Image 1 (cartoon, helix red, strand yellow):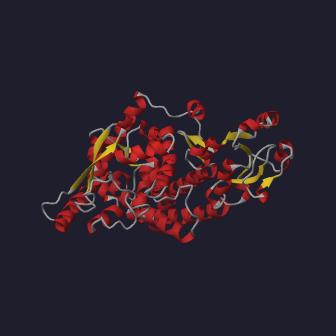
Image 2 (spheres, rainbow, N blue to C red):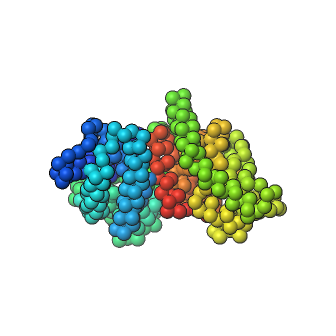
Image 3 (cartoon, one colour):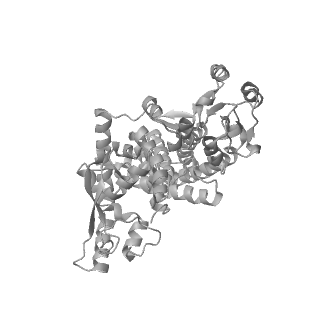
Length: 463
């Protein structure tokens, strides 16, 4: 793992990004040279370096938006090809707009066409090499887990899909006096010395996952291996690195107090506010025709007298309530009895237009005006209704902490977890929201913004 702007990123993902960026840069030079060798002439007189670097940046951004750099992405060949080709189509469209705005950067249709073709072939080759190599054991960190109780079981459950993670558990070491919930085939029996296990299994990292640390840790041996270069982490830090979430069962107040993150400041807040205004204004400039079409469709279906927008109280930063704006996707009498209800799968209160705008997330667009008013951010935890917040605050520990930042139109939990419609769903989503509250910055906001495009394009998690 390498930590960049508070985000833990696997080294092989960084290598993949660099390799594909270099392929895109090289493809620009190859396209120009190939075009010149065929026709012995070229009209491009500008600096090819700027064009090549810009093309690489646009391509990496487009591929990020298509979900090709997500650690949870499935290694599916057909799906990868579709997403790579789609990202190239988007990049070509963006570069066409750039060339129209800055003609001096355009190197000619022929040269650019060859460059795109070379880049596509190179990226597909690099991508399939990565898919075949990334799952090999040699690239995975070897993890030893201290503990065989409920906390250790959380790590065992992660191993259901080993291709998602860059580690392999070599075993679970049972300590004296510990109650085990794992099957015996998963753990190393009590009495086995820690040092012999680490040495014989070439362990890279030890995760302390005891349900009760009062039973005693082999501190001398742990310190010895720490000094030899083996990384030692607790369960909460392990989940933060590997799953990009804060596991509630592993957290305790002292960990939150002494860990880094959960900080802001004038500079951070000002930068985030600037990002919010820029991103929401850009979204409005792109989406206003869709917003107009949505408003007309609602009027046609429900009549002139029916409201287009839906206003509903939500809980904002520091628990302050505000009225969120959305396009109305349910019947006017959806809650005529005044009782707040979770949205359900195939909810019969949703109108025909509502099903479309919910699936495409068009119903969320009026929240741009909430961002402008400073009630919301572009990126942040999704705001909940006061009735649900009161219920969830009593049922879920640390739930109030998600209100330390402004709620957002999109967020980390929306990318990592499907639509929530229960207390259990809210608990799981909170683990991702707390990760965002702890580690939020402009870099993470930008990544979330790009990956939100995947949610919209592939209709992930809508209800």
